[in-house]
Length: 291
Ligand SMILES: NC(=O)c1ccc[n+]([C@@H]2O[C@H](COP(=O)([O-])OP(=O)(O)OC[C@H]3O[C@@H](n4cnc5c(N)ncnc54)[C@H](OP(=O)(O)O)[C@@H]3O)[C@@H](O)[C@H]2O)c1
Image (cartoon, rainbow, N blue to C red; front, side, top):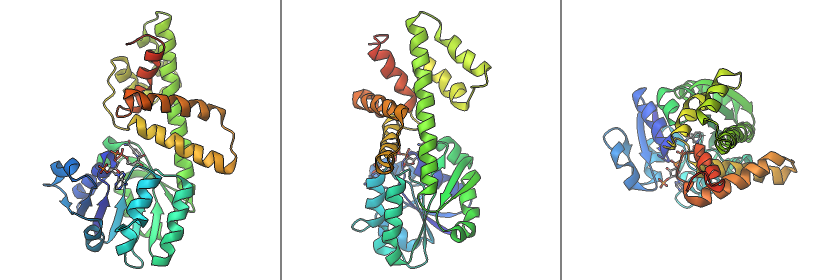
């Protein structure tokens, strides 16, 4: 099976490399060519979306947000201009369920299929095939391509119709944003009270509230290591997607509102391109614990 990857950012390139390692023929396209030159010896890089679509059996998309996804699929010279009937798009991008439904509605006139497959886990897990994949869309198509999706994921969860997997993903990222924020606020509190912050991380990891985040990123936060796996600007983006859904469906989420304003302020300072755990850096700064 020939796979065409569109969007070779942090996740897209890890997924494409995983596919290469698993024996698939892989074509790739990235809007900014200079960012993917280092992949040239491992991925057959194409200069346009049309080349990728014409050469591939399945198109796999991993781009930033609603605008990017609409652009690469429905935009001028986008996937829908070239895709043949009955072909499948597997869309890994985290976008709003509202945009996902809109895209599928528009794709109907092409008789093409699209599954939304938002992912849990970062590039390190993608490269090992250790993600969790949430699937929304046509169940028969999912079953037909489940082996391919399992190349990237140790667990797959079929959520239901288009929009349903993305609703789950947004609920999950809301949890992640809140967990990171509260660990960061706890670290800020103990530092202000002149208690060793290492004791707070040690305490979490000794308790039932231990997670991979508290174990791995917790240690990195203690030494201000914010090497990004998931950009803070993208966590802000996901909280914005939650806001879109909350507005449209009148969902009252008081903590989300606080998270949205904090991550927005942090992204507007100089932390947008850091890991989302750099929310700590923002809190330390506004509390005058750091310059
Ligand atoms: N990183 C993670 O841990 C993680 C985990 C789960 C889900 N996700 C989701 O996966 C998606 C990709 O995330 P990432 O971490 O790989 O982000 P990233 O490194 O910033 O990559 C974003 C990709 O989207 C492309 N893009 C953006 N706007 C575009 C447009 N208008 N037209 C064409 N391409 C466009 C970028 O191309 P350029 O290089 O040209 O800018 C790049 O290839 C996001 O939806 C994110 O929320 C990420």
